[in-house]
Image (tube, rainbow, N blue to C red):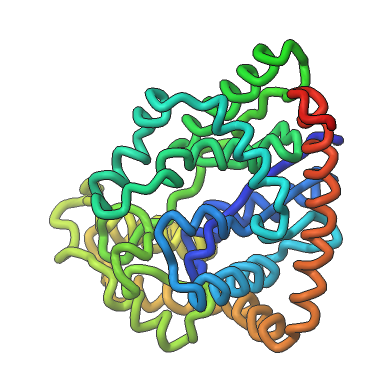
Length: 332
């Protein structure tokens, strides 16, 4: 397959199980099926929240380490930092001329940011969808692995691409499409019994890929449950459904079946169930954590991977910029 795949991740620090099952698993599958995959650390995007420079630098490095530890292979895909490709900033400027204030102000994520951080409503937040579109179009990606909450951004990317083509009377940018493997995208539940796993809910609600074994056990044992079912085959409330969903991610089918049976016949012991989940989770994360340690210890390897990935991404992006400049008349 010659289709191009592009996706990025903000460098927000340690990855948790939600990041792993929600994105990384698909990235690893894609690199084995598509020869032209570009995966980047979106450090430009993170500037909208004004991170501390030390934190930003270390988070970019940590994000790269953990993606490598999970199975991304620089020999199969292109891994790079967004800021290592200056052509992205140039195309971002061009596409800002094609984006209109009214459409950007209507974006739900912008409205959310205005409410959540009223003292930092910067232009970068408003034009966030433009930069996302450029991340995709700079490499002419056809497939973009995203969740349902990002589908509007894909639609906006298609609109920007078509607007460019129409304005300059060319058929240059193709329409990208959101993509994920069959079935519903995996949503990893929070340990507090409500919603999905998220750093914003607190350290103890997340299982991080770098967590030590004892930390994992303590977190899982504190997961929210209830007093148990009072009648056979009783519907599970959200907290209990979350516990079973966690088990579905890391435990063997026979283990899951056993605890489903004990729940349905009202003999379940949540303490035993959480101990089982904890041990299965420890076993699942152990090889990833060991990989993280190995990559952390090899700074030269990390530097080479980032340099090589940046060079490959710049080659692709430079071609796009040369052609865009020609199309719009910047050809002195």
